[in-house]
Length: 254
Image (cartoon, rainbow, N blue to C red; front, side, top):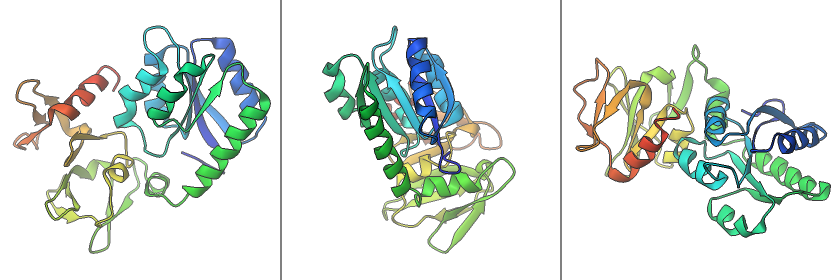
């Protein structure tokens, strides 16, 4: 989470020297806090999920898994407001990076002016996003405090553990069911991305269903039925094949 106008940053690159150089260069701008780095893609995914950075600098060519594949693998669990900057010694990946919704692309070895331009764009983009729901919720939320969700009747004050699942209704709005089994309709303009941004525990298992994975025990690979921990063992919820694949891909990382 951005604090005091500083951007929490993670760097993933299989070359330690490249990580050190980029980290040193970013320090000069006074806007970046390098919260973690990794030379291994899977370790990098773990760091990203644990630190929840504002910015990810991701090398593309790495042994075992490319940076593009890594972002695709963890995309369902990422905040929609994270900025991904791919960088590589080869410009042949530029189009693929753009297709992967990259914020920008940096060629190695980069020139200072090129990094300057990206930093300026990052600062401007973060400033524009200050009012988004994700930052509002994260600023209020921790394990002890409650945070607010906008409903059709007002504000619902809950803790993360109070949320059981969100379901998209035929009336084209999301509804949350709490762990206390109360139902609350959210404002019509609430998007799935807003709900997923509440916490990495929120995972989408169908186009119309987002659940709190803290209560999820397993998903049957044949029936796609979700099994929940007591006292929610009787819940009858199924995942879709498309979203189940994304969740399964994450299981070795979560």
